[in-house]
Length: 209
Image 1 (tube, rainbow, N blue to C red):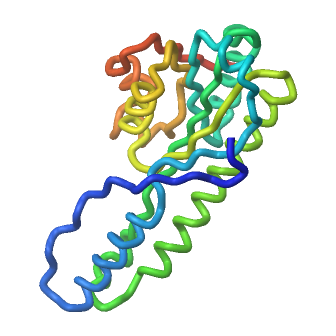
Image 2: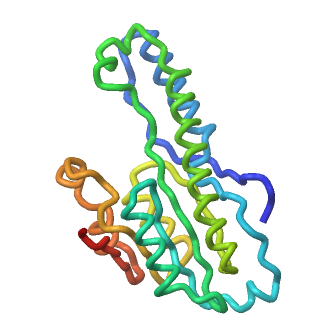
């Protein structure tokens, strides 16, 4: 795999037309930035030789984030599921798309948030890449074949889409990636994936202590 992060053009949804020139400027800046930032960033991990690639018979996707539940699910997969001889582990992380903070949205007509959005996006992107590289290193140290992909958008939709794209045999995901409030409002990411993904979905629940 290349030492550089490869990118693809993002699929974005157009913002509605606005009534003021400044608001149109803000909207254009946000849409332009969305198309400049890749929807899927392939993170450099370890190069696999042709012989090891030819031995791959299963693709296991592991969804990770910064939570302890994600860490637990990853550790469980390494210990109980992954096979060094035949498996390719695909690590995925979905970062949110930055938006204008609620208290400031009212005044967005008169303010240019383009630079703020760009800065937040870059912070999210860097954090996502570092997270994936840290987890990939753990797999590499144990001689597992792996690759890592950073995505942006709604975690449920992006995970389901990527699982389909890589033709995964299984998805491993923690049971509590969202906080209690978000889980109540938006629904569980793991529950959604278990109903929509075409493959086996393994929801790993962290033991309550």
